[in-house]
Structures are given as structure tokens and as C-alpha cells.
Image (tube, rainbow, N blue to C red; front, top):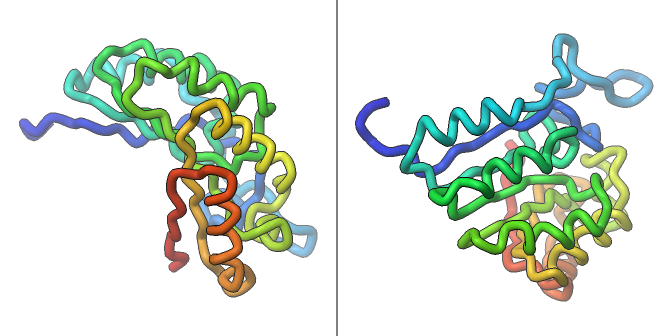
Length: 195
């Protein structure tokens, strides 16, 4: 370490996902659609590894369970990983990034209660469009399931962020998606540039 305390940790918890995206690290396209990238190993972060990392950085205040290489909610041990993070008094913020199509609505509805001692538990729902287009990039997801899960989380008092990646096929829906997010009670709507 360089003498500066680490206050936040970006954590990849698994390589699994409930969706196939056009992410070059994860999938390769072919005439039949998308498949896992060659050499990608499907594994979950061991709870002991997360616990060790949190202990290694005593000034750590925030953990982000991200979805770069897989959806955190696809991890077989996501509940144990969250319980581990929630068990440390120094952790005040936990973010979970998900496509929102995995798990049951009851799971999302229980999250705010499980994490009530935190200053912030925020779920970032990666929703790239409306019902008509979200599935184009987030292949294999269910719009209705995403809406059900986000609604359950928000109605239980959860802080939800709508993350939207604009593409040619969905950029005309940005204002519609923003309107949906506001009616549902999302606290934030963020556009993420697609390079």
C-alpha cells in the first residue's frame, strides 16, 4: 500500500450472468447468438477471500459488487458474501450492480431490512431501454422480471439506480426510460457512454 487508506473496494463476485451481452470479455457472437468467451472460467468469489480483503483495508467504507464479468446476483454464494460485507462495522455503503432479471422479488424486498445498519445499500439496475429494446443488449433477460424485482426493492425502502447504456437501437427511448424510472421511484437515472 502507498500510505493512502483505501475507502472503497470494487469486487467481482462471479463470472456467471443471467444475460448474454455483447461484452467482448464475456461472450463471442456466432450465427447462433452468443456464448461464453473461450477460456472464461465460471466461479464465485469465496467468502473467505472477501473477508480477508475487508480485514486487509481497515479504512474501507464501501464495497461495490459489480457486474463487469458476471452478475453478482448469479453468484451461488451472494447471500453469504452480502452477510460478510454487512457484518463489518466499518462498511457503511454497499452497491450491487445487476441486470435485475435474476432472483425472486422476495429476495430484493428483503435486502433493505438485511442491511438497515448501513448508511446506504444501493442496487444499480442495468436496464438499457424499455420493454421493446432492453433485451437486444441484455439478451436472455425478462423485462417483466426486472420490473417486478426493482419494484419489490423500491417498495421495501431500497435505493435503486437505473443505469442506461445508450445504443443506436435504444437512444430514442432515453426519455421514456427516465419517465418509467421516476414513476417507479428510482432515486437516480444514469447514462453510461458506450464507447
